[in-house]
Length: 420
Length: 206
Image (cartoon, one colour):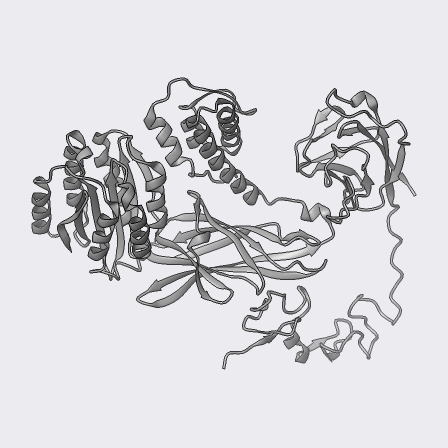
C-alpha cells in the first residue's frame, strides 16, 4: 500500500505575517491489502422505533436481508436494532451460509415500537466491534427520527467511547430526522451522512455502503502533524471529497506533534486536507519548516509511516510573491465559503428572513458556478430559481420539497476538485 | 545513539533538513553540504586537486572558482541594461464622485511619482499595520490600506494587480478581477476609491 502526499502552498509570507496555509493532497495507491489478514467486520444498526412502523420497517428489513447476502464470504457481520433499548439480533459472526440464514431469520420477527435512544445502539455496536479489534470495522446506522432530547448528554459520552472503535455511515430515511444530529454522529465516527428520501431506496444505498466498506484496504490511518515550537495549528480540515473539520479531534502525541484521525482508506482513494498553522514571524529572508505532515498507519500497535510532506514558510519583502494566493488554497477556501453560505442561507430561510436567505444562497450559487461544483449547483437549483449564476442573482422558490432542502443541507459540505 | 544536527538557532535537531525544534532550515538552501569540505575538487582549467571547503582560487593557474575567470580581480560586470522608469500622476477628480461619497478635497495638488521599485503598493498609510505604500492615497478613505500593486516585469513592462481591495479598481473604466495581473500602457487611467485618478506614463530611459 503506497501513499503519495503533495503540498500546494504559497510559502512566501510578508514581513510580520504568521499564518501559513497549505493544501495537502493524498492519494492511496495499492492493490495489496494490509487488513485482509485481520479480517473485516461490518455492523448493521437499524432503528426500530415506533415511527419506523409500516413501509419503512418493511423496506429496512428487506434491505438488511439482501445486505447480509451481499457480505463477502471472508468477512464477518452483526445486526443490532434499537428503540429506547438496543438488541443484538445477531452477534458478530463470519458470513457462512448457515449464519446468513439464521441472521435473516432473526430479523423477520422485528416490529417497530418505542422511542429513539441512539447512544444505546452505538454502545451495543461498540461491544460487538470489540470482539474483532484488529479487523477493519465499519457500520451503517439507519434511522428516521430525532434522538430523545434526554439522551443528548449520554450520546456525547457514547460517541467519545465509540471514536476509534469503529467507523459509521449514517442514513436518515424520510424527512423527520435531524441533519445536524446525524452529521454530528457521522462526523465523530468518520462516516458519511445522506438522506434516503423514500424507503424503496434503502436497499440500493446499503449495498453501495457495503461495497465501499469492503473496498477499504487499510484501517486506522492518522494524519500526524509536526509543528515548530511556539506554533499553533489554527485548523486542520479534510476538504475533499467533503469538508470535515478535524481541528478538535487532535490527539497530542508528544509536544509539537499531534495526530488527526482519518479512518480507513480504499486502495484508490484520494483526499485533500487544508492546514492553517500560526508560526512565530520571521525576518525577511528567513526560511523555516512550518509543518511536517505524515500519514501513519497503526497495525497491531506498530506504527508505519506511509508518506510525508513539508509545509514551508519563507519571509520576503517582495509583495508580488507574498500577496499571491495559491490556487488550491483559494479553491478550497471558496468551497468552505460555499458550504457556510448554504448553511447560513438555509437558516435564514427557516427564520423567514428572505433577504438574507436570497443573498446567502445567491452567493452559494455564484461560488458553485465559478468553482465547477455541479453537484451542489444542482441541489441549489431545487431551492432557488437562478437568474444569473455568474452574478449570483437568484430568487427563492415558493414551494420546496422538504427532502430537497434536507438533501442540500446534508450534502452542502461536499466539495469539487480543482479544475485542471 | 541517534545523530543530531546543529540548527542555526542553537538547537540539536533530530532531522537533517529542518530543525526538529524550531523549524529553521539547517544549512543554506543551495550551499554545498558541509560534508563535501573534505572531498577534493579539481580545477577545471589546469586539473590540480584542491580542498573544496577552502578553495576560491586555484593557486596553480589562478582560476577563480566563483566567477570562472582568471586573476584576483573579477571582471567588471557588464553595465546593466538601461533601466526604464514608469511614472504615475495621482489626481483628485471630483467628476468620479458618486452621490454617497464625501465631497472631494480641492486643496490636494497632483502628485507625480516615479516607480523605482519592482513592486509599488497603492494604498493608504497605516502606522498600526506598518503599511507604507509607495503611492500613498491617504486623502481617499475608500482606498484600501493594501489596495493594488504596480509590478515591474522583467521585460520592463508594467502590470497592475488589485490585491483584494474592498472597493475595487477600474482600469480605463472597466472593473479589474482581483489577484490578476493586467498589463499597462502609456496613458492608461486607473480609477479607485471615491475620486482618485492615476494616469500611467510609459517608461523612458533614465
